[in-house]
Length: 430
Image (tube, rainbow, N blue to C red; front, top):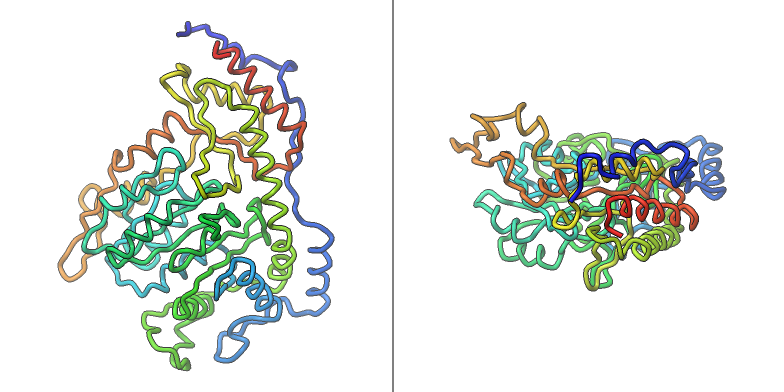
């Protein structure tokens, strides 16, 4: 136990004595290969080669088609479709399932808001299932509890670099005739049972925005082995409503299209970045493993979990406090670590179900959506308490280092470990 004037408070007063006295190097994964590829596109004068009309140009130019082909080969999927962002890819993926307004989609509360907004985009209803305490991914047991007669799909999020329990989720989908979308924005290259995360559901994909494992500035990739879903996302990407009458494909109803097209410059960058993905993953794993080794003996600090036959690609380095051992408020711990010079610390993540859009803006009664479908009103609740693991972790236990932002070397990591040990010593846990 600690007095009101314990050492953790004094730690905040440190100035020159802090462990890390310099700024970490911001990550820059763009090399000469990408610069040459961009120059080649610039010299060609063709910065985009899409046309919103039937024909080959509907599917994009040379670099788009080449990038998609290389993605398919790398991830061992039949179809890859590029987008101007993963948000766009998510919207198209939900739209590809041919859902109706009022249909429910179960989703994790721990994700970027875009994952839930993609559901709202199609007038469907997000239903939030809780997360697993160890991996921060959606909990299959909570998913089961949230299935109703209106449930049509699940969006699982492979968070922080670790995949969700795709095996159990697929069993649930098969049992209840549900579709499975995998949001693998933060875990490209992670594996489950030697298969790539993001490729095992009905449709999935990856983010290509800055600070992801590979990036094109902004961008996204949708992958699937289903030919109809691939066709539908391609139409949604490129003004579908003006194209469907000229298509021989069936089942292209409810096609509302957008301009979600990636440019030739981004595709050319993506081709070069994809070649480096394994190298970038190896670098992230090295950082994660060094931190795991250096921090493993700190009492009350719970390190990242990697499940059996899963791999981790460390987008963030997620940590938890065991509050049975740590008797100091999480915010003070994070502030002390920051005072020691550790950069990229975040004290919490997301609880999407508690955003104003669900709590205040589109409420029916107190906490229900307003849509009415054939006289039925949704009974989905967004009250605090529906996702106890997610809420407890966010409020009390979870914090992380955004290793995605920095080019950390061995010295940086050694000093991060030293700073942790110094803080732990000052709270009498060493």
